[in-house]
Length: 241
Image (cartoon, rainbow, N blue to C red; front, side):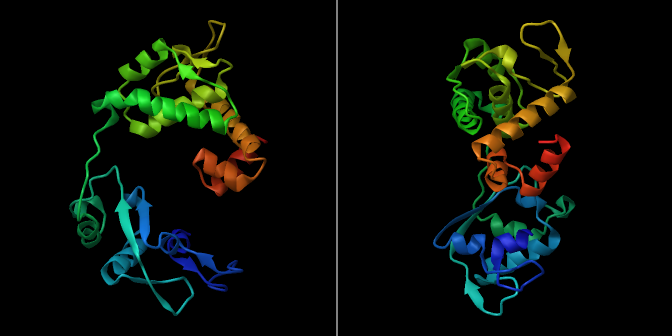
């Protein structure tokens, strides 16, 4: 599936290929192609990507015509890919490591948290059709005090969960669920909710909100949620949505 997305394919390349598809390399023509979590790439695809980088050419799946790759490649990973113990092809590692930037962990640059949190707040408000204007001082204090082991992704989905479940126009500290061991307090009661149940409830609400925002277009809803269409189908069935 990844190779068909990266290289594209021609009609009849495989079962279900009813037409020709433009790949990411072709779409990024004379621009930049960004591949996130490059360390998760399958061995076979690593070899094919290396051939593209070495030769500057590629083939669409099922095609015999060689095409020129004309794009800049930027990759990212949370893993250390250096050395055979990493499980990553070292010839590919050295090929993509021409110029490396190490992004500090979020806990080491907490001055970025307010800007990021408000950006995610705006994003979540649009995704879930909520008019949540800002975070309270108490909410921001909680965000700044947290250690953020999941870095920016953890911050993003912390804000998305809060926006999806709140009825307020300003997020307060009690709207935020931080850390795997934390329990959320139900608004207006002293009842506590087990995190697993709270997460499932939030996930269900997020998916329902995304489907509304996407006008029931599953591809668009999956894009809003940052998951695959296959995952979305599974979740819709799981929650009977």
